Amino acid sequence: MNLKKLLTGAAIFALSATILAGCGGGDKAAAPDKAADKGKIVVGLDDNFPPMGFKNEKNEIVGFDVDLAKEAAKRLGREVEFKAIDWSSKEAELKSGRVQILWNGLDITDKRKENMLFSNPYMDNRQIIFVKKGNTAVTDEKSLAGKTIGTQSAGTAEEYIDATPFYKNDVKEVKKYPDYVAAFMDLENGRLDAVIGDEIVGRYYMSKHPEELEALDVVVGPTSEFGIAFAKDNTTLRDEVQKVLDEMQKDGTTAKISNDWFTKDITK
Image 1 (cartoon, rainbow, N blue to C red):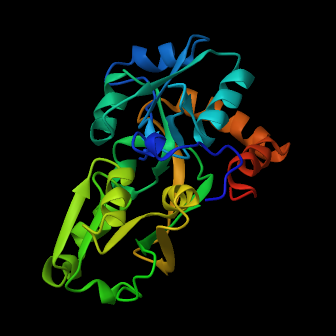
Image 2: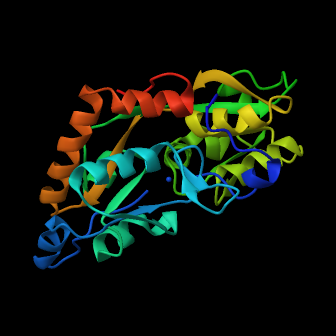
């Protein structure tokens, strides 16, 4: 993705790539009250998921979602802390109250709705195919038969792959990585034939490796929507954040932040 705030150096990408944060609460009734006060809001995220949330060369957590969350917290008059979490344990982090919000390119799914409360969707997210530049053997999803592919663990693409018999019966091997950067590095080095993953993350990575990779405009699985997640019983904080997010969309702030990162407004 063509972003205004590009980081320099391939080394940074060795530290970057995946998705979010949870709303306090947990099982006790007192948790929503705590989340509703004017104290600090703890946002949980995968700090290796550019451009949504990641560490820059100064070891600072930055990103598109980080900027949105900072602006929302400012309008709520609260301090915000960004806490890196194990993304595969994001629901547990949210339920326990160790984080109050998951805000890091998190897909809204029916399964996740069973355990989390979501904001309205603010961005579409497609899963597409990435290949090493010059690879003409992969042209669409069916052409992945007999190939070795990669994706990120605990992500939307993995959920689709695991639920689709084609990947078990026809694809040679599906390798799962802790983040997309590791998968893309293996793709560059010839250890994978293709990567299936988030278009936003992939295009961002490609902007730093324009001679190495290319994206196929082929949607794999259903298009998802990004949302902000909260503890299931924390409607107070969800409603407060939704209110300021709506204000940010109406006054053009969200569009401006999107333009800063993507050179255009790609939000809903």
